[in-house]
Length: 168
Image 1 (cartoon, rainbow, N blue to C red):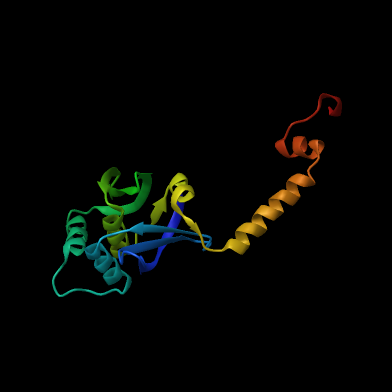
Image 2 (cartoon, helix red, strand yellow):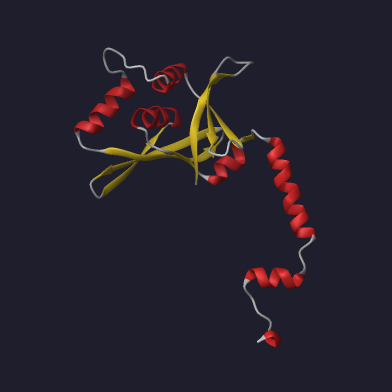
């Protein structure tokens, strides 16, 4: 799994649909997730640390969790099927843990309010993320090509931890 942070909210230029943008810690990959207007407002409110005079839905959920002594350990965006992302909230109460199915937008809104980490499965990042730093990606690919081009069979065996019988 890859830990990600909310980079912000954007609007799709063609449809004007809100998108929450997650970024990895190295700022190498970004994961755009289309969300609804209400979830966008809730995420923006959490990003700006805005406290409404009365609790809105996500604030109410946090209040309920706190009152029942549950914490959000983390959220996990775990799947992408038919252009739909799937997430779970990992809740903790003492030694007990529960995973609750959630829309990623709701999970993210809750994670921001509780300072909980946001994790994304590697296969989701591989399938749906976009590169942020293309130069760094290309430099990494070139470094790997150079490494492989200069790697002798003996060096590969040595790095893998194998020994040859005649070396013993």
